[in-house]
Image 1 (spheres, protein in one colour):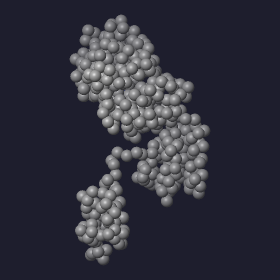
Image 2 (cartoon, protein in one colour):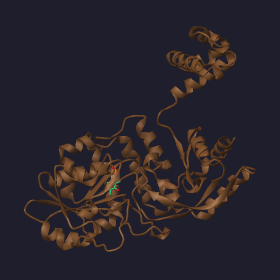
Image 3 (cartoon, rainbow, N blue to C red):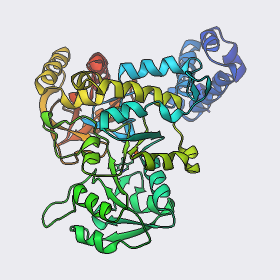
Length: 450
Ligand SMILES: *Cc1c(COP(=O)(O)O)cnc(C)c1O
């Protein structure tokens, strides 16, 4: 047995040492005891790194305590250049939305209370008026997420009946969420028409029977098809649906409320466009291009929204008050598009001028003078199932050296910085880094290169 191992302290001796007192003052005793045990065990298996004295032992225990008391869910810096990153929590919220959450979270609210009548109200009224105003829909309903919205509408309109959809739109969104699986769970019988690359309006017409409950159009949100392709437009489908007195459901996915065409992002319909084209009901997410909290939004005719609201399944997907608070505040910002582009983080990141990013990148690079860091042009992207082929001109800090190690150190540091590796260099895209995070990025890069 080596000297170091023989010198391992007992759990009790460590707990009673003066050096450990501050740790016991800031963490629950049980947590510290566990950390002491783990630290001693670690020293037993790695004799080379046995702490030298009480102070060093206390520091090792403090580190173990920190690791076990750190929240599991914590902020990270998104340096990937992918604005809507589902793994990184999708849309960061606008200040107005965060304030709205804080206001409602800290006390009671009129979530289901009608103040004017002093009687029971409905949580589903809260964002409805704003959604009507912003999209032109007759009525609106908010549930937990986009997938829930789709299941609910399909279940309401087509349970034990047929839902007609193009083979070109039977897509997988990610996280094994596949449109055909969702449709099956909703109780609707899937009727696939057309081919992967081409589906014509006549294909829909021929598929309609007395069993048809709904025509479904799904937005191809995360891929594009090119070449010999054809699809029926929403307007053509609406006309078929009208002739047969059937509803047309358009799953928009991303949920664009304000057009981004002025910023070079065109080709995706806004919710208003989709309704104007004749969809009877539209479903979309709250935390994609809308830039709000996770939510599923259903827009449509009075009749359909009323039926969805009364569907018992809706209770299982009901939306939380914090979500409604954040969504209402985000929607309110959309009343003033210019303000929305500044204050809704997703929209701000998508529309920021590249020169502004370059100025920040150069400032950071100057602070890191002497380090192998340069400023490069890069391509950012929208992510989150929207504008799948759009490359947004961007600026990145490009770090030379051992890319694998640097990427890992950035990721494992505090805060976590998620970067990407390209051509053997680590790239930190400025488009998805908030200006307020620049200082921490400097510190993180220094630490990763140390
Ligand atoms: C993202 C997406 C969904 C699912 O929405 P969530 O809010 O992630 O549940 C459904 N359909 C399409 C087309 C999408 O892009």
